[in-house]
Length: 162
Image (cartoon, rainbow, N blue to C red):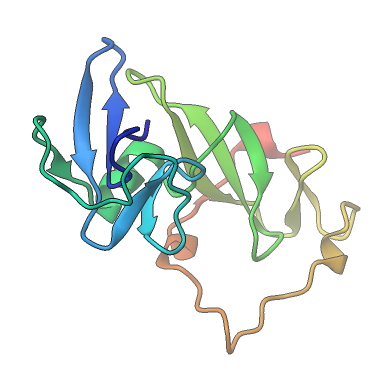
């Protein structure tokens, strides 16, 4: 949760109801929509301060990109379940509550060969069997550099296959 007094700071709550303070790197603010630190120009700041860190009474550990991947996975989830990946029909996000913390974690999964993700059903279906994936334009390869996370995506298990 964001710090109401300083947009560069936020807290993470644990299952035992304790919390720990963190601060974003210089030039970044905590964005309440994505629940991560973003460049200041891109973040939605609802706190009283624009992120100028006055230090504060509470010590705060600096949060890195790795911190957010460990805490939230590769996708900031708003609710449990499967949702479409922005760039292709083969991959999708699955959001589950993490054991212990209860926080939502997003994981990037890929459908098995010959299938694609159908958002309305939240499952992988035979490629071309519906869902409007054919109408989804492929990303321009000159403008889009695939994330290394795509190569690391696990294949979806049977619970995601129709």
